[in-house]
Length: 280
Image (tube, rainbow, N blue to C red; front, top):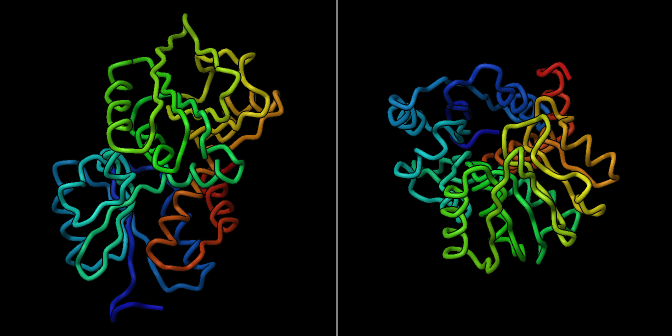
């Protein structure tokens, strides 16, 4: 299935890019859907990013996935941007149609959809560990989707306060708070917290009082390698429902696949590919 005479092609741009499983996962997804599409990976330093994106436009690439540091740099080069991507300042997925580039953030959307399946978004109180790029993407998506209250627990309160101001001004969210956490002063979760999300790259002990974890709270972690992080182990011991980083990685890539192709992604094929690539 092709939309034009040349090969349908998507790509990943980032720096560094070594060890990223996206190409292998999406090639398997194209094959599972019987699509004659190809996926390429390019290591693109920031200084060359504008030119690389111009090349993708000229060569009519159907889609582009962005890895750091380009997710926050791409906005000036896009014709359209989805609401969550605009508010968070984070674009990880681009679709090209007729020479026009539209930017999306599928990371926040992936987590939002998985949390919705557990009933932990609408009017829910959500605690997010971190205030960096993933916290921004997740916070923006949940705020737009109707979360009742979002708490950002982070080591640098200034970053959280800027994010708090953005969400309160640009989304329907009316309750957003910042908690400063350190190893010496860990986070104690409120009893009415319905979801906790680790949006930091830390996979080992986090500054959280696990005994305060509400037993029915959904616990999610963005770290996908290893997928069984300290937080996931603690949550499972408390019999809390969990969403691991591997599931999130697959879901955000599946959403990009569906944006580009209009075809449902085979998530099991994608999971098998990632587990094979990462030797899990």
